[in-house]
Length: 284
Image (cartoon, rainbow, N blue to C red; front, top):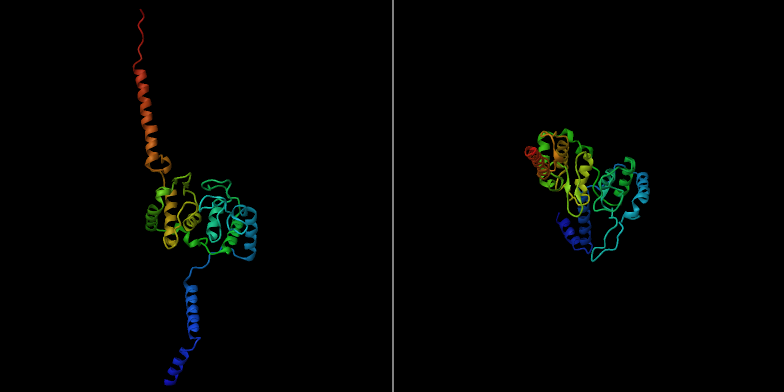
């Protein structure tokens, strides 16, 4: 035993001992990171054929704005901001592609402050292929699993919890029932009524346009599902009061009250006044 300790003590002073310890430390650190780090984002289909097919679709329909290698296309700007004709797609992940193309926002018909939702130009297979190509460029958010989209299995308590998250983080732009609303500089928060659960989840993941990103560290996948459940519940909620006024809140309600309610009363009072003062002139 004494010989082993003396031998180790001697070897410890070897010139290469420090490098050996450093190499072992790096191997341990790399192994731990590989075990706990999130996986790189991939599309649902990640075969070489799908990636190549997605690249060909990208070159035809997307490269003119986003660059041949998805690096973006810069334009002349002012100061430190060079401007951007089409942003870089490196690192946006499959979820961003699936949202933008799956809602028809991309390809964009014309330059505007915000890409509106419109008819989808690509098939589901083509969207999956483009998503596979973009996801192969760099890690990014994945397309959500079906287990995080099954809002119909939520309990009333979970939907109520989703409502709390929604009112805390989303009401300022999307309205308390997801009806949407106007924003500065010609932008707007779109209505969430009729939007697929997958696209609502992907919007929270990727933060399209002016929307902030709600990562899993901010809102967990289970909480995102609860938010989707609340939005879907509000979309199917009946209008117990009769006329909803678009669900835009007290401003629209006040407009309807003043224009239709008080305006109608003023018109009716004027009509009574005109008919109540009519008199026939006496003949001389």
